[in-house]
Structures are given as structure tokens and as C-alpha cells.
Image (cartoon, rainbow, N blue to C red):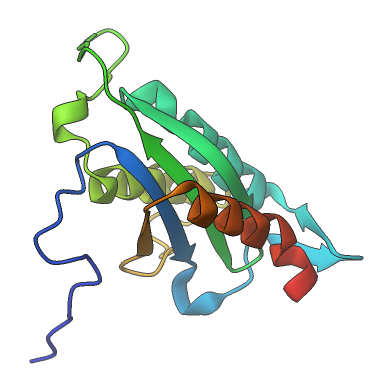
Length: 159
């Protein structure tokens, strides 16, 4: 039986406040979100849906702020900043409290919402959009944050 090793830092609480650099790849690295042309990413309908669902995350989860991000043809990079503050649970807005919103849960919600919307548009229920897991890096200081922002902004130039 195949055993997958966890990509998470052992013993780290991913529900705590902090900044996290996230990379999520499409299933089999298929370029389903558009193309890079003249060092610019031109998103197709699937790419626009992925972008919109990423931007929607703060509406679902309390105490997250999205920093720089980019949707590439076969992956996406983004920075999620989990902030502190009073937890507000508003059932009408379906917000999920800070205490239960680990990075895995946030990324899982993004992958699920975007996949469902993309599959609905193309009438492909159950089609796999994303790889099973994702990569994360805990951003430890301002220098790392600036370096990662630069990497995200320059990602189209590397293709």
C-alpha cells in the first residue's frame, strides 16, 4: 500500500496566526487556467474562476488576509496571512471561526469551491482539477515575505 508523507511541518499548529506561502498544482500539472503570453498570464474561464474563488476566501474564513498571489496555467501561488482578533461567528454569512481554520482547511475549501464551479461550467461533475496536496512555507520574517512577493510577481517571467 502506498503511504504518502505529510508535507506539513511536524508539530506546527497551522491554525495559529502568521503568514503562509502556498503553492497548489493542477492535476497532472495540466495547463487548464490559461497561458503565459509576452510574460503575462492570460487567464481563461477556469483561471478566472480559480482567481475569484481565491479572492472569496476572506468572505468564508474569519481573520485571514490575502496578500500577493498569482494563478498560472498549471499552478497557483499565494500568501495567506492569519490575523488575531475576536472570533465572530455569523451563521448567516457562513463564516468559519479562526480557531478551526487551519491552512489545510482554507486551501481545501479553495480547491473544493473552484473545482465545483469549474466542473459546473464545463458540465464535468467530479473531474479532478487539483493535485491531492499542496506545498506551504511558514513565512518567518519581513525579508522572507518580500522575497516571496517578488517570486510571485516574477513567476510569469520564469515560464
